[in-house]
Image 1 (cartoon, each protein chain N blue to C red):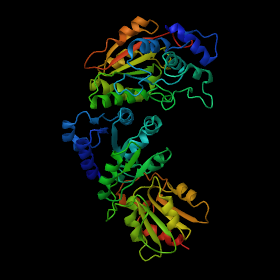
Image 2: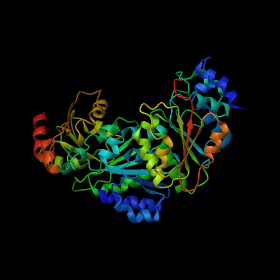
Image 3: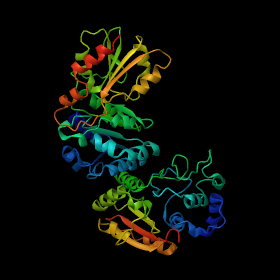
Length: 225
Length: 291
């Protein structure tokens, strides 16, 4: 199975024939995570030692749902009634409705704080194997709550956390000096990669080091281009 | 009450590996020694209240029982959306413990006051709200809250009653009369008892306004006259009382902190007077209203 197999699932969600998979900024990163990186098993959703993937950027979750369906977290029949009255799948994901969804998100700027708390909670229980991955968008970084989490995680060397920032340059006022520098100045290890290059994304995620949280800035096409 | 919280939370951290405390620089010194022993479960995130609640939510997602603590205005008002989304909406809970109730911080000004915290929490589903009126009520409430996973708001004040009541989850009658039921929440009991001296009214006390004891209310409100005296925004529990008595003719007087930013300092006693919550003003309001 490759990311191309997700395409028909995406079409069922969007009912949209003209959008190529590249219209979904998160698709390739999500695929790499679920196909190569995350230690998660749809048959053992409550495994306390599973890796956690937190979609902080909860809007536009079509690619997320398609990847979860492709990986067997829920039946692909669910994809045909997006945001319907009885559908578990809405335009923002609900962890109480969708197997495999770790946080309910939608309002921007909540995932990284929850991710930091999750990493701290795992550490306090001696669970040092699981990693906590949080996916954000470059515009989402406008929310100050992220910067509370970035500063704290960096200062305390919370190395179970990996943030992935999808950069499609949609932040209204941009990030002069680059996104990675916002994290690096607080002590994170940071790498910027081509968000469409699966090997580059996987390699970037693999560069996490002991003693520091890690961020992968995944650059994709500029939004609207 | 703050010391009772510190002592009880320290004991809980020591004895129950499920509990964790999240601070945002407030009260950090009081937990310094315990934090040396339990650095993974006593966490100070710095002056970052949004993160404090987010971290509490994350801890709860891993099965811990987080306690988050600060001044009410920073804990609740500032981090309201985190409280809304990072806890109960995720299917988890936490214990939020505030100090600086209403005008406890009057000398610091309006920036350090939160008379609206309980009303804000009351907009959210599923929360238990404890408003102890005496330091002796704090430990049992906090210890009981640590034993489950539901969302709990514990609101501590420097205003206190003379007596601690262990059995005040429900409306507990402390004086009996016929003309009205006067409900005193938390530290309002002391001024209410003084204000109602010699009046033919029932006074009932509770330290737990959510869930509100509507069964007890119906049993005690046979006169049809109910006065609700709350130490936070006036009328915060009026909708609960009105709903509980919807099938009966009744009169309701709701007293509490008024919706005014006084732009003044002074003591909590001064502010109680400004808001009509000192014994003399309460008595005047009650006697004017009583049939």
